[in-house]
Length: 104
Image 1 (cartoon, rainbow, N blue to C red):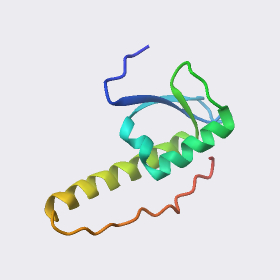
Image 2 (cartoon, one colour):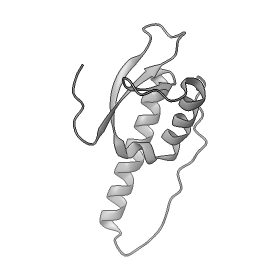
Image 3 (cartoon, one colour):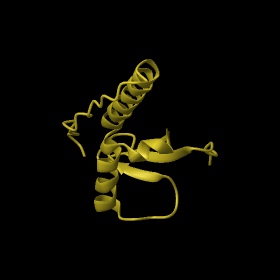
């Protein structure tokens, strides 16, 4: 098993009916606090319950997970860029929570 670097978390993504089964990814632990991923974690708890061995399993298609990860990365880089150039302004752009996963 590959060692995950500090600050990152291994997750398994996939659906039983998908060809290829589950695929392993690593994500920054900070993503766990993002509203979109928190919704997916709640769904994982409903589907799988709590388990203590192996990577965290997420009940989502790989394509949908990649899209979710892209959304979080895009928002994170936009917010980081925005904070760097607008230190004195405190605008908040709420994330659209309209993202829905056809398989989640």
